[in-house]
Amino acid sequence: MSSLSASDSVLVKELFVSSKTPVQCHLTRAAKHLELDNSVLILNGLGKAINTTIDVALKLQEKFHNTIKLDIQTSTADIKDILEPLNEDDDYEARTQLVRWLGLTVFEMLVHLIALLIFTIFLALRLDDVAFASTSPGSYDIWIVFSPLFVADALCTYFNIIVLIRLYIEGHIKEAIARTIWSSALLFVWALFKELEKMLAVFDFDHTIVDGNSDVEAIGLINPTNLIPERKIFPNNWTQYMQRIFDVLKTIEIPAEQIINVVSSMRPNNGMPKLMRALNENNFDVIVASDSNSLFIYNWLKHSKLTDVVSCVYTNPATVVDNAIKIEPYTVQTKCEWCNTNMCKGAIVEEHVLNTNKKYDKILYFGDGHNDLCPVLKLTKNDIVFPRLGYILDNLLKTHTTPAKVMSWCTGEYIYEFLKSTKLIST
Image (cartoon, rainbow, N blue to C red; front, side):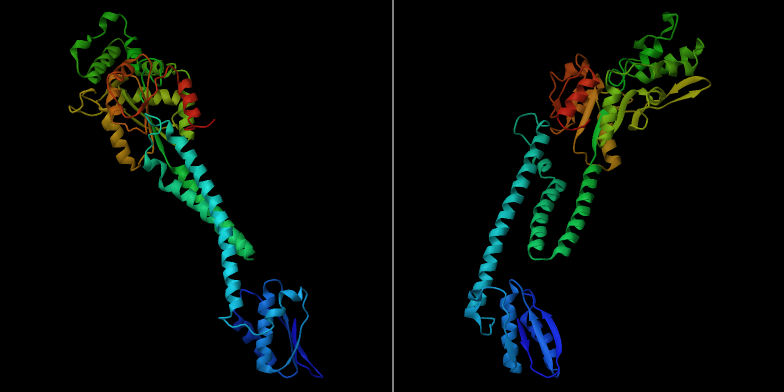
């Protein structure tokens, strides 16, 4: 459609009219051109902009009294009743806005339903993911289900669907693309935060990681056996007893290196190295809490190529002095009746959480002995304890109740398959 000013010599300008731009803006731009001598203004309006174009043309005609020529490339039936200037309060404009609003609302309702469906699926998956951590079916921790990062994921999906589609249908293609790029980056950051979410795996060493007792391996080097000190000499302090063992080993000229090599070559429980690596690769902090000693554990981990898997080792410190092993107690405690005087494993787990300043979503505890009961009793219903089948801890848990889920095991491979089935680890 064009508005023409007749003249022998004309200055032609083409103005594209958009339905989203206020009419007054079009009038201002058009008036600047029509105020020039011998000017011709061509107004182009397509689709939804046709009515706006007619409105602009008729208002220009009222002001400049120039000739209007209509070149309508659509059905005249659509516009024959509105060939008059439109006012802001015009009934037709009100009806148009109402229809536009209703149409968009219906569309948005559909988008909301789709987003709600996605949210429901996410919620179902989240419930399924934490179900195994409950001691009874349907008993879920509401704070775990609606964790902040999970809600952020759902809300991001919910609003991005609405915003992206709305930008697209309104013709803001560049903005929609920019929004997609921004949203992808934001989703990546959220995914990164989820990756940084850590869970904790606590391992005992003797009879858990290794299929045997490292101290017993050292005692077995004493020959003749009548040189082995009686255990009753140190009834409540295993560390002092082991220091006496190391003194005897030095007396019979068994070097510290030989003792360490014997312990380093101990066979792991079937599947334990594989399990520990899998936990480390799936965002678990893997730590060791053991009443053995640092020389034995660190050298065994080095020999088994697991030093990069275990982040912390809590045990009795030991060093080599004059080719003999010297061991000291990890601490001195009298509060815990379940643990030895030199170490409380329950306190160790609590201190680790406090010192690392992490709120672990889940704790897995692997152990076998009497001193493993203390930390197990302090676990929550979202945690899992893995007592070795047939050992002291397994028997104690038959008479002592822990909020955590109890899964007895006989091999590390069994634990690996269980954790894989619960989606805590992946292959």
